[in-house]
Amino acid sequence: MEAFRFARPEALYLLLLIPLVVGLLLLAHRNRQKALDRFGERQLVNHLIPDFSLARTRYKAWMFSIALALQIFVVAGPQFGAKLETVQRKGIEIMVALDVSNSMNAQDISPSRLEMAKMALARLVDNLSDDRIGLVVFAGKSYVQLPITSDYPSAKMFLQTVETGMVQTQGTAIGSAIDMCRRSFSSQEDINRAIIVITDGENHEDDAVQAAQAAAQAGIKVYTVGMGTAKGAPVPTKAGQLNNFIKDKDGNVVISKIDEASLAQIARAGDGAYIPGNNIRSGINQLVQEISSIDKAEFEAKIYKDYEDRFVLLESLVLLLLLLEMFVLARKNPRLAAFDIFTRKKADKDLFIQPTD
Image 1 (cartoon, rainbow, N blue to C red):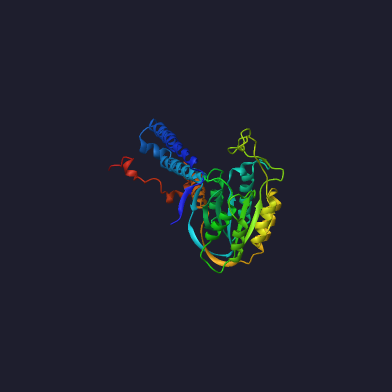
Image 2: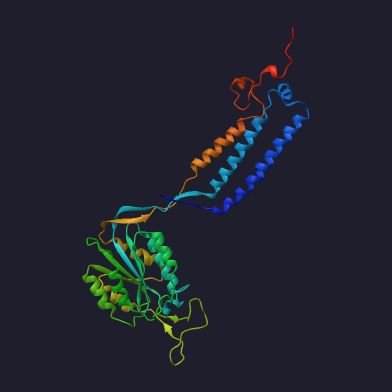
């Protein structure tokens, strides 16, 4: 069964106005009744002004109130969706290894290396159509942040939660991250795969070239995206700090620089390509072109169907009620008197004295 929600649930507070509107309409109806009662007996007044109907004014009030309530539901934006569906797609599988070590807080590119990397990844996801994607975060160790999936909105949601410090073991173990990505693909055999490593390239932990070679031997291409500049920048102790930087054992501020030579070597070993990531547009365009050149295969994917607006029926009912309210007049139409559905006819004998012999 499809899930239901309101896009703007705060608009439902307007329903609190409905009792007030109904109360005012009922008060106006009662005042009209009292005004007629002052003229004399009800049945007699009805014959004196046969074209007027209190019942019609009451029905008009209820139609307006119901139309107003339905319009509030329309404004709240009723939606159905979030339905898990199995679809056929033709693409490849991509695992992204994102560096979250402290050096990614360096601000030699604005706003920081990590934030620039996240923006580049978000743009990459926007350019995907039928591919699966997963996310591994790494520093001294590697962890799967998002298993391989075709659910792009979830991928971008998980990406927003990434920050430095989420991996307790510091360092930059690129080789471990590549191995983790290689183990995180699906079990489907007839599909091509790629690993994208986004990092500043300062690998201090393992043999990333050997890991890239192992991936290439398994038919997986390895691409590297470099974040940072050759000039480098000091590394804040925490994300966003400007004046407190990491220092070495001698008390000197550590300057972190991108290692493009190592990243290019890793990409060559992985039968991929090195792509500078400081310019998001050109870098992502090049990366998308590289990925697009990989042969695609068919696979089944489970995705969540997006929420869809479903207000047309309610809006139609609102228009119908307002049209009825507009055409139902307080005064009767003599030509339609035979079709009076609002009042009951009374026999004349109830109102007049019958002549006697």
